[in-house]
Length: 225
Image (tube, rainbow, N blue to C red; front, side, top):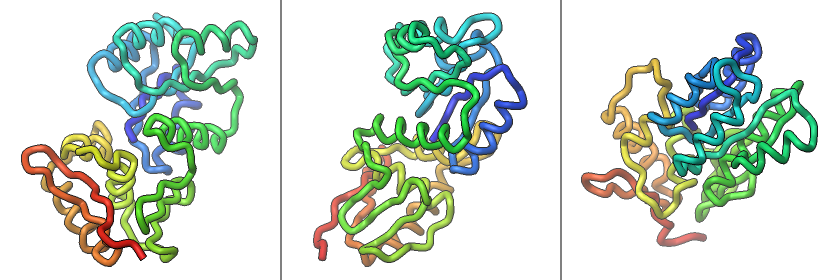
């Protein structure tokens, strides 16, 4: 998933970025409120990690402007401010969750997973589609209880398709999901990953259908045993 990390502490931002990339997320960092506001006005993200104490513009103002643009992207507020008043202010402005510094990176990762799942109307740590079960914590895909061997990017593609079950996912959305801003990428690579996934899912009965001119749609299995 594409995450915007808004944090002015370089050491903390680096540690958070490493942890999130290890969980197969793509992370872009903004070090000030103005930089974050510009990024949010021009790019799409799956999640925003937003510090409150930022230079140039504080995090609450960034959040206020984001919601004024009617963006529904989930926002996890990160702050040393632990008063009830501050938490209420952040939630009232449109924050989806609140994490007080200092925090363990494992808790951050868990909250990120939960927010992303909830944004796709899935509250469980597992995503189930017919005979497929995706463990979002262990990053494993199972078919009828048996693990399937997938590369990290194949797993990311099938995760995106399962999260958006019944909806068309464009090639560009998959590219954005797979690659960081500094990486070179192409729709041809997406076609390769989808081809490999189809071969590995043949026995599951789950079909990844091409919607010509639009993208891909994960189909329900025709026969589930």
